[in-house]
Length: 294
Image (tube, rainbow, N blue to C red; front, side, top):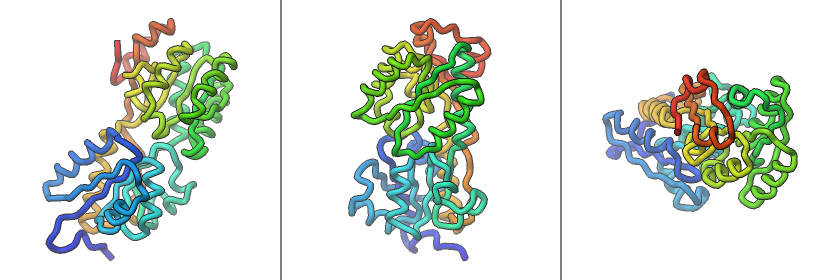
């Protein structure tokens, strides 16, 4: 049975939840504008468990939840309002967010990243840029769950690399980098987490000061001085999220809308950082880059 699109006499209402500013939301709003009918949007970027958020979610036609903290907040606030989730860190089936990718079965669907695939790609790109790389450090925020950590460990084993895991948190970052220096790491992987996006300028400064090639998911990290970034096109994810919302407004149930994977990825390279690290980036790698900072 199709769920009601919106209350009579008023436009559909979309509530967006995120743990902070994100590049996804402008593209999402543009996607909604392109649908050609009025949609009310109310955004929350902090205090996701407050009474104002709860009231907005209860009155929403659809909730867009970006990243793990927002998804968990949305799930606590409603079991009936459809949730479109955008998540780069977790396995939706393994974490009980959906029953299956093809038929989510509840009130949540959306776009989720394939962690084993992205982890292997990160290490392959680092190895292509630095063929002698054997010892890796990984900065990982325990709050995001074990998927990325386990995927990087597995990928490192397949490539003959050793990897040591270090905690990523605001309080532990200096201690973690001291330990990374002590282990004589040859490269750093920054696991995706909202915190990485929030403190990416500081992280870029630390890896550069340690003279370590690094990779993460967000191209903003490369703009800030990091070496490599490879991850989903967040603008494309925002536009695809608008497509989910459109289908739900028109009567489709979240339970019946298959979970999808990001399909467009971006590779960014900072050649100024490469020069500072004495890395001669192969032309084959440069030719595949979507953004090159010189």
